[in-house]
Figure (cartoon, rainbow, N blue to C red):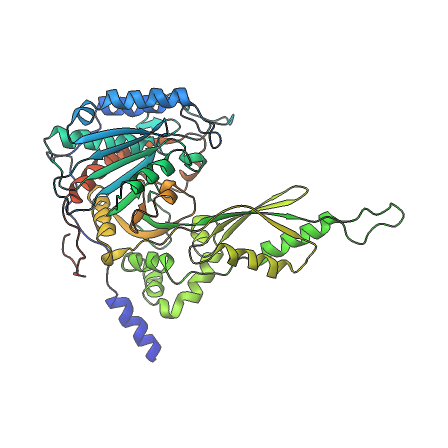
Length: 481
């Protein structure tokens, strides 16, 4: 009975992490409409085949054309005495918008100029590099990943400066040219340049997951997934070498048989389920008050229901499952290659130790091909002024949504900026349903005209909202930010 009373009381009194800032309306004087000129610029940006194939191998001619197009498309940005522009590593761009208040640490908005190749898969409703506007969407490679962020940020800055804005906080815009192939020659060089100049950032926002619809079970509203960290990666090669037998006296086991047993053991014994602390717990608690009653009961009482939620999430596929532990993908050949995505609560060595413990066979050799440690976990919620101002900006353009911290499974250019700030976030301001996920790096990549309009306005509001001191906020309910 005592436990039941505690569960009921916590469910009823659990605090809300959501806020209610004034929404952005189309009737506002500072609203940026998706005019024909702006949509045409986005479509034109898509036509540049700025493809990255592998580190150091891309499409330099197309990148140079795209850079020239950006310069010509935003005359106010490129003529303002407040703005300096540098080309880094031949093809990446770094803008500095000078603020008047030197006591405010600068912020940085990041995106990237390159895209992944288009395969021969059929099914495109518009040519993948056409930038065609069709049925309320702009089609093409880069519309979601992530030329819409590049163009949306520049459209917002152009609009802001054209209105006579003189910023207080210095703002950097950083656009790497090889993010899709680890960013070694783009973002890495930009970060080094800033480090050498002694720059320390208040916050950094790069591309990430989106505003999701019909994605989080138990939540009817859209949920904006604001990633506070991203998984590491570890590619491991497993191999078995056996002495050759003879047809009349074969060995009892073959190399392939031993290897297949090792792979089966790893598949049946996943990494430790780590849900219940860190971003996973924060994700649930930020949404608790907006969930249906059964889900609300559990997420308001994680002290009791954490094991149940761990089990439920482990049964799911995709992103929600990936929040609970390292995820593994096997590619079997004569050897087996395992791609681990390392949970932020784990280390590379934790994963390797788990592999050895599960396989328990010294004949299976393990070789690390490449690795990347998980990203540091940035603060979220009321303890982080930067997180809250990004949340505010999201809710101004998506007032019908919720915001929650998330773990990004992929890797972004943020890996190169860890030394510049501890407040690193990842978010792309467009709506995605589960049916849209395959469009990323896939067929029929597209963005709705409405979402691109919101993208521009999100960055405009963010630029305006960060142009003041960012302070820790008290937990007050039903009060506008």
